[in-house]
Length: 119
Image (cartoon, rainbow, N blue to C red; front, side, top):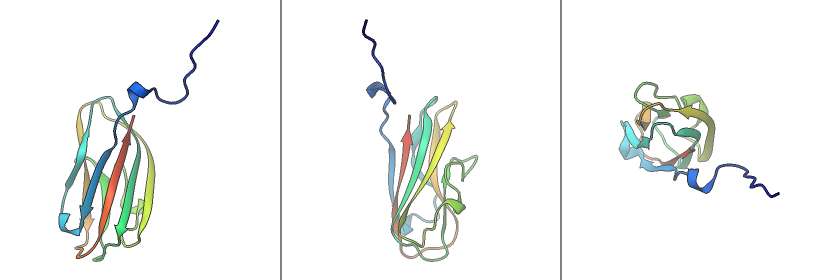
């Protein structure tokens, strides 16, 4: 007898990530990253700082009810070029828009990318 054994998500369950390229010009925000469909889980949020920001900028990633639900100001340093990963297990019961927020600071330079991985 043969059984099919699967490791990880099936091909049918893989969802394209939400991706946002942004710059200092998007301040003050919020900037829409995309919509997470009801029942989908956010498993990881990545912030790539490609060009460092100035102006004592802070960045959070979340939704309108909790601006730091996916990544708080303590999870990243926008004035340093680097990659900032946060493992999430956030699932929304209803379709929900997720955003990039700039709660503090006024930048004049800087750019980055947000990638939100879904299951």
